[in-house]
Amino acid sequence: MDFINLKKLNRWEFRDWILNNIPELTPYQKSVINDLDNSPAFFNSLHIYEYKERTKANFFLRLTIIPALLFYVIFVILIPVNFLFTGSWGYSTKIMGWFIKWCNKIGLSI
Image 1: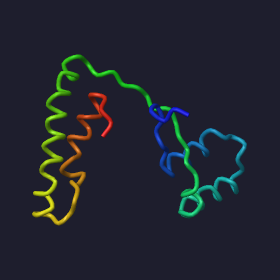
Image 2: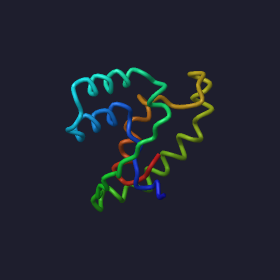
Image 3: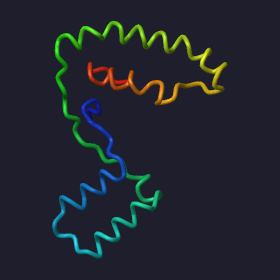
């Protein structure tokens, strides 16, 4: 199976898909499915995937792939400095959020 074009569904996305796409569910079954959403043991064993929608980036946005790779190298080099200031070996999503969005727009998966 080719996992490159697949995206793992979250628990609530899977629950919403079941509730919206299976019309034969009774109200009792819907309530049981909603209660299972609060049970982490049930959904931890399930791995449901859906196809990712491919987005086309325009030419000028794709030209920014070289600076994106340079930023990535700079972030990797500065991880020890970040550890000295924050005490953690990674960047928070507050710091990396803009970079992750930028990489997703140009087609890089980070």
